[in-house]
Length: 288
Image 1 (cartoon, rainbow, N blue to C red):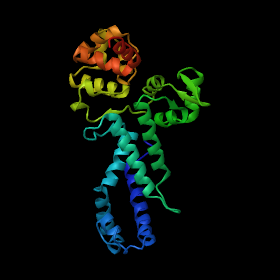
Image 2: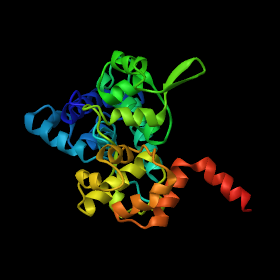
Image 3: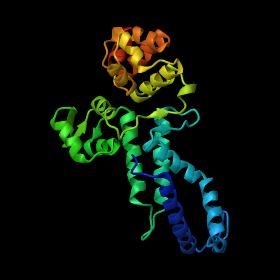
Image 4: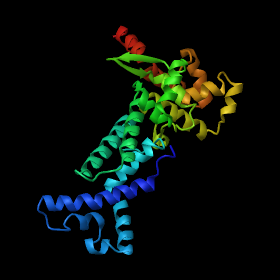
């Protein structure tokens, strides 16, 4: 993911805004500077000086629009999802991606617009959200997340390292298979929910959120991956679980809860809700 640089993207955002908003003022017949002075925190003439440019860039960095784009970058590139009040992780991710998309659209005119890198980061965020939400993923989006070219993904499919299915004539990588493969790629950073410290298992609602919760819990209780080798599960399986891939038998859940030092029934409930939703629904319906 080193391909993207937040400061370079900010500079592109700033420079694009400096060209687009005067056009908005002119086309809507607004007083010159009526929007730009507020946007940059300085008048148009002062903006042309080195000191004015420095002040303006600092002001723009304090605006909600930049905060939204920065949150997109943090999520898409670094896998860090900021909490959004009482929203679930899924709703927070949706808000981050959609809000950033709206801002980038506002910065487009016939001849000026955000760089291609911004739209790649946006697609990256959307792909990450889909994967985090349990959806299967297209080959090109998996390549983007892994930081590899399409041929690498196609070769992995040919080698049966990735499981696929066809839907409406298009090939998709199965969600669990994609998550398992991604954790072996150096270019991929797993999603981490920054509000995990305030969460309990009852509020975890997706496979990747489940994995991130357990990864944080393991660090909190100061367990190392190597500690698993003397337990019921090895470090390899532990890495899969923390990537959001659960392939263990259901009767292993209590031992897993003991390893992570969480309440047994809370973990069982989370595993059933997230990984065995259909079976859980069938059980509940039979008892009603």
